[in-house]
Image (cartoon, rainbow, N blue to C red; front, top):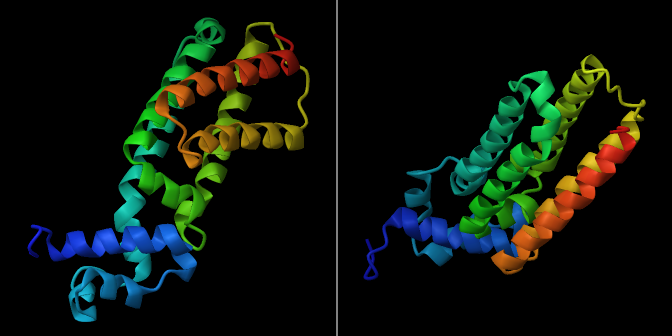
Length: 205
């Protein structure tokens, strides 16, 4: 522990966070991290086997939490009786998006790493993973509309992929630009109204 009360691990994490934010995962130097932390390379390897392990330690928990929250919302919606799903479409997804936004703002540096500086790690695929989950949810919902006698016209898969990817990119722009939380919440409302109206239109609802 140093004079500020920080442990060796705290010093490594603090130095790594700055190095990764400045240079991204690929260009970050383990030597620089160790030097900035004021610890030996041996001390570092007492905690982590690699730069990958260190990056995982910084953002793994946040990444997993966000995906778990998103998957839970999809599951809760899918478990609603078919006749209740259309009326709950916006409330279920809205609550989830607000939760994710608030959580991301509580862990802003970690999500800046995930969204902007994670190329070369598993974390660079966050949006792709969410698009895949949302696409499956959309297909399941279209099947529900069919059962309810409110079938959706055919939606081209390429267009569907573009629209869903665009939606998540729009959402994460709020975090990347670090706009004041109150503004971000307002923009999220506007964004959701825009995409909901668009999806309703092309689904013929």
